[in-house]
Image 1 (tube, one colour):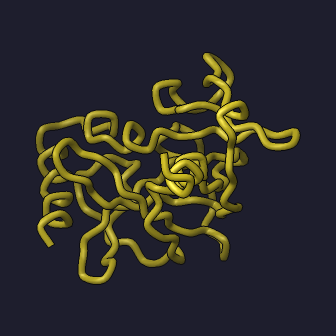
Image 2: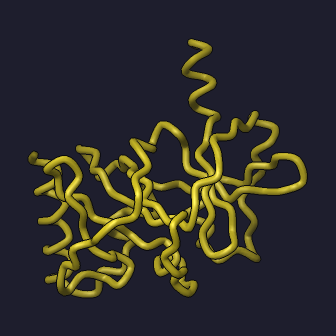
Length: 174
């Protein structure tokens, strides 16, 4: 296997949210942008805070704090939107996630990634790939495809589901 590919597969972007450190695979991260104005889309789940225009594309923005059931953090000058690419079946989609702050890119060796805990986290175990250990702290490694899947986002009505799918299809078609 190519060494560069092996290194990329163990690199993660770490970020903070509601006092916890999370990580997402660097290959899923497209860019990090400053938090700006969001356009609210009526009748979408509360965790979908709105959409942004990213170079002419409609990008839904998810507040992971609300998604995980913790209080929403205040917006500060360090709040940002991490643009990620998630797999929605046949085609990938671009979505944004709100982070209180971005920390750094870290590399975890396979021996430094532990199984997700079955208790004590604010996040469903299904949403975790594991826990990355660096020094004396842990980062919760998210399976961003599961966290942001349409089935997992609390879409409570067929109308909400259709509206979200239309928004995502607009982004995919451009």
